[in-house]
Amino acid sequence: MATIRDWPRRTPDAGRRTPDAGRRTPDAGRRTPDAGRRTPDTGHRTPAAPAPAPVFGLSPDWLLHDGRPLAAATVLSHPEQLDRLRAACPEAAGTAVLAGDPCYDRILAALPHRDRFRRALGVAPGQRLVVVNSTWSPGSLFGDDDSEGDLLPSLLPRLAAELPADEYRAAAVLHPNIWHGHGPGQIRAWLDRARRAGLALVDPLEDWRQALIAADCVIGDHGSVTYYAAAIGRPVLLGAFPGGALDPGSPVAALGRAAPRLRPYDGLRAQVDHAVGHHDPGRFRAQAEHVSSAPGRSAALLRRAFYGLIGIPEPAGRPALLDPLRLPSYAPAERTAPVRVLSRLTDASGAPEIAVVRRATDDGPYSDTGIDDIDDIGWDAHTSVHEDTPDPGRLRIADVIVRYGAADDPRVGPPAAWTAEVLGRHPGCALAVYVTGPGRCTVRTRGGDLLQLTARPGADGRGDLCDPAAHASALHAWLAGGKSVEEAVTGGITVVTGRVRHGVDVERDDDGLAV
Image 1 (cartoon, rainbow, N blue to C red):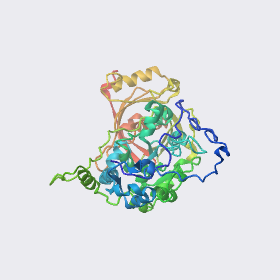
Image 2 (image 1 turned 45 degrees about the vertical axis):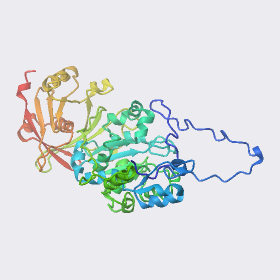
Image 3 (image 1 turned 135 degrees about the horizontal axis):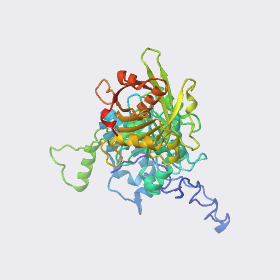
Image 4 (image 1 turned 180 degrees about the vertical axis):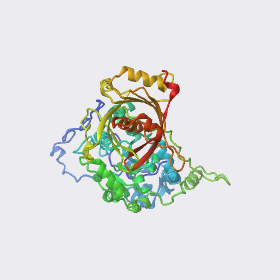
């Protein structure tokens, strides 16, 4: 049973978008301003003051039938909800049961597994995970009830364009009604550019809690997902917030007054970094206190209520338990959009290092956004393209061509055969890269060298989750900078992404040279 929370006062299907691919009509399905109205003197009635809009979930429209409560028990998570229920629908107040919040309890129990959830999303040490979420209403981040309109579909490609791929990871959590209302095909079409740039679309039923726990910053709206993020201490930026559609006395409305706003047309990286760097973990303490009056106890309270309703005793000696959050499947970013790579080879300390900054790009309106946030003097540029790019013409101008897959995949492998095939088909390509797993890839150079690149594990023995394609681009910069394959084999290479250094071993693969 779901707890009642502070939802918009609108019906769930208000403001639906038309199914036209890639664009929503802001006024689709709305009436013209005078539709259905009577003329002022019809019936000679005196115009009455409009009645206050009902609060979602707490009004008589939701809770009563013929003046009597619909439910035998109305489950609430906090006494402040009971106070508002008594004010909005006193007839249903007698059915109220304070039973905490099982969703919040599952999140609290899983907080110690934050690092596991981050690794499941392919987030490497030193990377920041930005989770963008939208609830279901016209005033949401994915809604069209704002003068700005259609913010989320343009925001997500900009995140990919502005945030360096090896320093940030982006994920989106969309309300299940968004998926149901428009259909998975339409949602994926709307977000196609962002997905090709590496955006993760998170399962809206199972894995959104894990994404919140893993997040470094959450961009959201007035939905419960954003509220949970604030409650567990995550930095929050509000991309949309229809304050007029909420009960002003609700905790969600209070969150809208406390959380900073996203400036959608300013640089996104600076805003994310500021939100993370200047976040006070206690900023949303008041909101956290209103999530549940019985944190960790919802299972016991709910079971007691359920067994009381059916009139039998609870099982003796058996604790009431909630299912733990599952560990999501490993799903690192795989970019099929072309990637612009800036690289710089340095010898300042006597140990050569290759700094790499990668950003997904395309021919869209945001393809160059964010590139100018570093001084490109002294940086070399090249283009890395996934073999499955939607635009095959990009392969003809690619310096590096990449594929991800198992080494024993009979369709395209083994890596030695695939790399030889790619270099033979694309004479302008300098490096063919077959990524076989976390921290590992096979590379064939235009000079005919077949090499295995393997990232060295961290101090805790865990593998380096930086995309091996970044290591391959660093090797390309190494060779273009006048360094030899033999030097790389002898000492390995050090790849720098942001403030993180990755040691990468380079070995010859003599077994594959006969291909």
